Length: 504
Image (cartoon, rainbow, N blue to C red):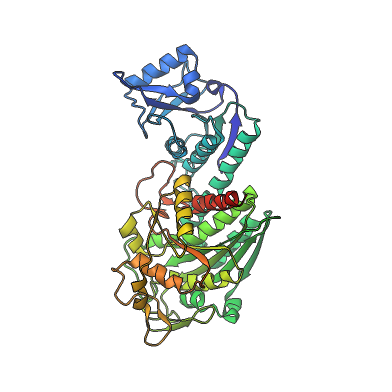
């Protein structure tokens, strides 16, 4: 695990393999890049040598520009890496991405010193968070290839004006807690499903909650049967790995608001009897990204000591085809009694969420949010980097959008057209699990309409479809790796902090 410390020593004297600095376009008729942040205060000779070297190597200082030069005569570190920040002023996301870009490019090095602009606590939080997220690598299963694999940086030192300042220390601690929660979610999404069955996921939830003020309750298949959780049981009955419902509760002293999170946790999704095509099916190990986000968020909140009650429900099942699997045409009785005719066993996430949503409302939360890699239609509509937000509460939808974009996670508000509800009328049950007009007609919106049926009138609720940004199949960028991204943890943590601030 990557560690991060602060230092108020001269950045050029910090012990590291690489010193990271920031650059900006020279501007005017000048070509090349100029130094910004702490690097702008380097000794005149070092500064001149560095800028000349960067110019000779074609550095532009534009956002995303990365150039390395020898550190000889400039710093203790043998290498200096200059990352472009573009023309200022620099918002938090620009700094977060710059730090992430730099640290991601340093895979294979052990120690890095970071000297980017951190004049405010917010800027420091962004730089530290970006660095920790950019240094992430998933090496659990590297064995014979480990010697040639470039793991992430082990130790990061961030140069600050005063490493003992209370606000500075708090900003660093915040970044560490958030990055830890995101990376926990990434690890879960990246784990092979053979080693992350519903039972294994529940065990991980127990382990990461140990020592934190989080109470945990796990319902096994017997308890789920006795409790009438027909959605989770129906989805999981085709697998030899039984389902689980995990309830985690964080209750800090003095907290008056209650946020409840319900995460879709399909630890592997074959589609069941309505089996998926084989192409890219291996990525369906990540169909539990919603549950990973719900777990990562509550752990982050507990580490930060946020003054808000949070309950996370992890709806865990493995969707497999077998002789015992649910079949198209079967009718499930979900928790609370609503019956659902299963027309497509690959529309399984909404079935486990139905149980979780109804159960979560028994805790009487002020705000209820479900998070799910729910529909391919979300990717068609919003691409692979944007989360869709659907809600029965305009203020909540806006609050999530604002929190997500501030945290650096793209979100976009989406509607819930009333006319889609009629598509779920069943001949034999209360509902069908897919709209009768088919998935091609507003599938993301349609899925949210189904979930809305399990939300009581007056309950403030939002649905986050993270099918696009939860798993990055393409090239890594900024602080986002290939594979699991841990999306929604930062958005939900920021939302929780906003709720606290509004009540203060």
